Amino acid sequence: MPDENTTIKQLRDLMAAFVFEREWEQFHTPKNLAMSIAIEAAELMELFQWADGKVPLEENKLAALRQELADVIIYCLALANVTGIDISGAVMEKIKMNAGKYPVDRYRGRYE
Amino acid sequence: MPDENTTIKQLRDLMAAFVFEREWEQFHTPKNLAMSIAIEAAELMELFQWADGKVPLEENKLAALRQELADVIIYCLALANVTGIDISGAVMEKIKMNAGKYPVDRYRGRYE
Amino acid sequence: MPDENTTIKQLRDLMAAFVFEREWEQFHTPKNLAMSIAIEAAELMELFQWADGKVPLEENKLAALRQELADVIIYCLALANVTGIDISGAVMEKIKMNAGKYPVDRYRGRYE
Amino acid sequence: MPDENTTIKQLRDLMAAFVFEREWEQFHTPKNLAMSIAIEAAELMELFQWADGKVPLEENKLAALRQELADVIIYCLALANVTGIDISGAVMEKIKMNAGKYPVDRYRGRYE
Image (cartoon, rainbow over all chains, first blue to last red; front, side, top):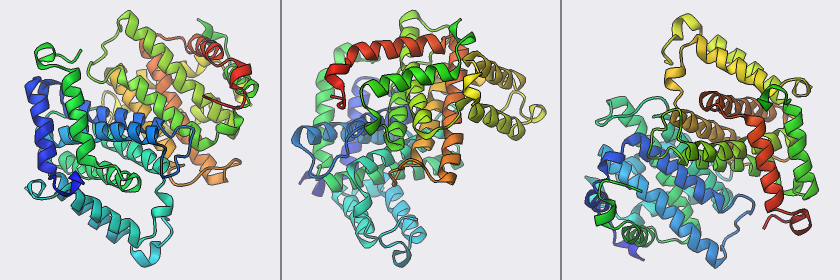
């Protein structure tokens, strides 16, 4: 699948070009982008507002989810572009931090 | 920067291993992960609740943002893992769709 | 204005009747209602996603805001109904707690 | 319970006084308040992130919920104060609108 051959940088660049062509940098303050991520996250969540969403999801729900997830990630890419945050570094570091916080032998099968 | 050489799949696999080792798949329903993305998005947004967040951000705000952004993305990766959504494909398709919806000559410098 | 003569209980009862008539109590778990509050809060927030929203708001934005605010509050009423929380008591107590946390002489004109 | 004897206006006035004493009107733009509602809604939701929250809730979860619900409502009151929206009118109108949208005989026991 494309995720195997696509770097984070390639997606960032796609988004940067989209924004640049429209001269939308002026709207992309960190505050506005943070709001946008939260708004799109809520739209994604709305798909499961009253239903549990057992996997595998039915086809039309999966298609809607795919679009909403893309929207969340698109604004994450834009926020990373604006602030210069390296996503891979941030994610790897945070997973490592979480691994230290939740040692396997104590948290296997439990989250608290 | 690492984003140049890191594929989406590599980050997905890191997260999948973290979840697998702790046997946390049982908690990772799409509904719970959708909520988790929204919760982390709100924590990210909280950094700009009363302040505008002009770039460049001050150092400690940037460090906090880096962690919160990682949290949002981590749960996006987990949701993609659970549902089998290809992130790159979804993002590329959505940006293309948005490019059609917001033609450059009509939306340059304006978003509505 | 009606707020002067309307008790919280009256609004709670209106919502309770609406839910009862439709036999929707089965969907109104605290988890689902918490999600619903967050979803409606995001829709409210969307009105200010790219714009600042200086008061007085323009008429159609105010009308939209009125509806979105009602949606948030409606689900708050439903959650209070399901859990038996007394809203007035909770709000009065929290404002008192905040007054202790943010003494006037130290926080006048500043929030941190 | 206090909700029986407390008007919306009384709660609004409590919040208005709290804000006025601290000269916080300057921070209470509709945009910032909308963000604040969403942030508090996410904190409320966090109580049910991994757990279902069957009623009756356990005592310490109920106490936490009471505070988080108060936080959401406090910012709703502040937003109503800033914009002059009558909450009771807005809620009554919206419930009436929803009653028209979801007629009892068609939506009894189902939401779609």
